[in-house]
Length: 343
Image 1: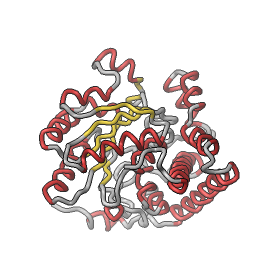
Image 2: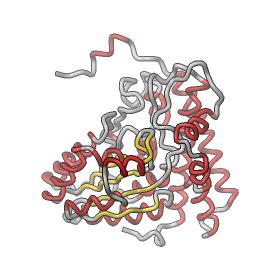
Image 3: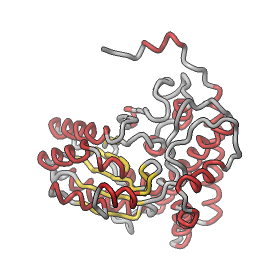
Image 4: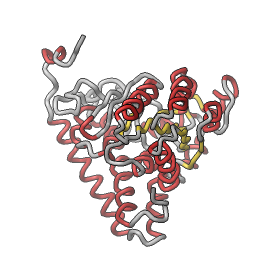
């Protein structure tokens, strides 16, 4: 794996571009609830704030490696190459979606781009990732499986059972625990004080005799280096690792249909009201990973301010077209509901 110092200019610009695309995509999902009420059915769990963690992690993967995140999952397929228009169409439950409109926001899959699938059940994908890693091990494909899940999943039995099994069998899987400090609407400090010990959460790896590290999830290069080392270890047959990536979630646990429509900024206001800590929110905003990375790239001469402006403008323009495409896509026919069900 290249060290973060060895990443070339083009790769660094690619990382900034993907982070910008994820943020603009999530902003369009967020705005849909206000600008097009009723288009998104049910909840959509956004990942704004997670861009550096997502992109840093996926920069470390090789072409055939598999990716299995949780239900807060929009950013990963964007980085992997999924058509963002079809991704938005899926969130809008439209026929041109990547799952033909039957998956929605939380149940996405694009196997052609090594995006195996997601689930709305907390922690379920952790065990599935181990199963995919076992397949890769048995078939000797050389693949590594990247498993992403939230801090709340570390309380699930599947987390502990899977890490134990993966460690015993030395499965080629990297577990990335995305700690955004809130389990639904409860701050992790309150949760841990009452129900569980463990800070940092990466120390849970010790119970299974595997490496565990905590990284700044707002720094894509730090994430890339930590995840890359874990991926190399897995690829060499040395088994799994646990990476705790820490960042702040800028919007509430799940955005949902709001009636009557409220101002466009309702998500940020709701986040402050729900989390109850304006100072915390504003401090996190000041450490927003995208302007932070932009500033770092300009400082090291990898990109100019004008080029960064163009990248961000291109991301906005792309996502404007994404929304137009998704809105124009038809809804699935009711009779199609039984076409993709097997027993």
